[in-house]
Image 1: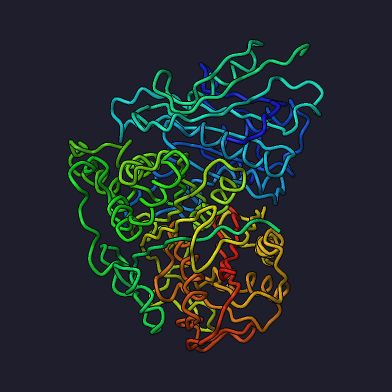
Image 2: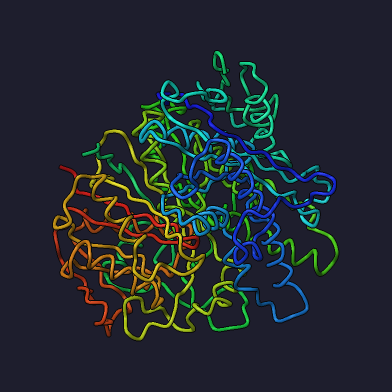
Length: 243
Length: 389
């Protein structure tokens, strides 16, 4: 590939913890009332990464990946359709069930009119997000906010799911040589092209947590961007001298 | 000016027909595919359904079964020769797959959830990873095509498979791959029909986009594939892509069309093409007054009032995740076959839009055609296609 290396200027990480089932409020009240856990998580990690980098959410291009998307909202719609009523659904929930709900909410909340991409690729979602982000940086320079997030799988549909909600964000910039002190450099993003076990995991974006930890750890290493041991995408996290 | 990328093959199936030839023939004839809704819903909802359902999946792929999966695989038939040629010429890891879909296997999950509600248990064979998720559609298509390059689903509601072109163009431009199979696919399902009904924008009659008697949209289903390559023979090329966000509202377009204008302007600038050189616009126009007003303002501002503007939603219904790719195909057909289709249902035209809206087919050599797709979340994209030099 011919993609440029990217400087990591900020990261965000949020997952439920005892006593913290939902992230802190990051959206204006009129949007927050209607926000799913997925939207709230994306808003939280986006804010963490942008604050760390001192970047403005009003002008950043977003790449948002989620393997399953607005699952909880979709389940509510299915319960409305198959429930005791007339089978009609909430218009607000319907318009908030699309995969780009989080990107749309962030755009509205921050007046951001820059284009965003919302995508999915099973266990390879983080790889696809970084590919889209690095492609944007290669062609346009500047900064990109790359995000992955998934809600826990609903036990209705996946009775034995071993899943927990998670979200992670990476504020990336082109031209690391021009950036004062990046947290790390991401480079040599590669895919083996294998297709085995691309959609088996109940926590498809969990590699986002490992990537944040690797960036914070202060050691250079290669990180698998899918399920450990079965990943097709990987990237090198290079620590910066003196950082 | 950026490099144009030839569209070396394309295919579509939707309410107009199960083959590209039938789809194009009915587009030329000005005949709608919209008819009665095949799904049981407690309201009138004409839809653009396939005349007969797509065939079941071959046994080796049956684990991925859903209505969307069946459409996705059926749509590959006509493009397979060209795709295999590209895979052999470029190497399978130098070909990418970017697919737009909004529902993936939701139609199948609806059935599983209905059984769960009725009996307390899911169907034994139900597999949310393979039959519901976006990744399931992706893995199915990788297995069905042999593509081994980057593969992902773009899902931005009604602009999904037009946004797929933006990602595809970037993959080519950055040198990541040498060919991209761009797809769009969505099957009819209860959730979308009932959702648009709840938003009070579903019409109880065949839709009338751009007409002063319009009263809402019809939902359709379909699949389209376009193979875009770094070089090669094709009747038309992808010249430019423009994208924007409205930052206005989840389900209503910006009233002044700022996002639509930015997307169209971006596509022209990306291609280095002047507004006066656009010969035809395939509008997003799904059949709502709000969209028509804002899109018309943007078109008139950028391109003036004389360029023929057509909505093809009257032929197919609103194809959601399949819409962008299908309408890209219609833009290419206009270039290749030298006609601008009638804007079906637009008569009597909404004169307040101040646009040129043909209500009968125009024989016209088109060299540059814009195709607009706008979506929930304010996700806008405009694609510019041009005749081969």
